[in-house]
Structures are given as structure tokens and as C-alpha cells.
Image (tube, rainbow, N blue to C red; front, top):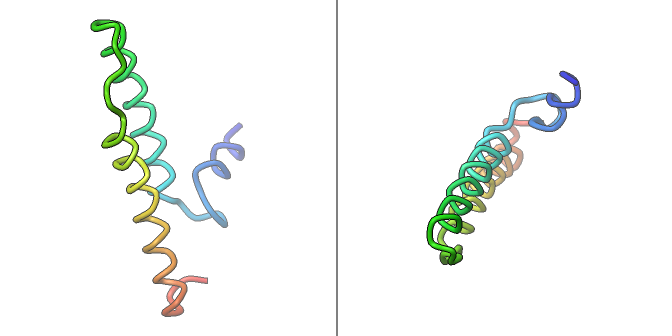
Length: 74
């Protein structure tokens, strides 16, 4: 199980904040939206939330790409 989690939240054996951060934001967003739907019986607009979650992962991948371009990461 530990090896599975390690592979899930890392790339090439290194920790990846973009994956872990995105996972935590996604779980928090699901709980938050579920609570809103439960209280109001209406689905809120999800555009901003979707952009926020995608940005977390995108920034992490962009940083990794820049490191690879400049040869600081293999």
C-alpha cells in the first residue's frame, strides 16, 4: 500500500506537490460543493473552482518543464 501511494503522488520517485495539492484541493472542493448542494438544493457555478484546481497542477508541471529545459532536472 505504501508503494502504491508513493507512486500515486510522485513522478520518478520524487515528491510532486502539484499532484498532492491538486488532490487535496479536489477533495476539499467536493466536500464544499456537496455541502452547498445539500443546504440549497442547487448546484453552484463551478468555473472558478475548476480553474483553481487545474492551475495548481498546471503550475507544478510548468515549473518541472522549465527545470528540464534548463537541465536542472532529469
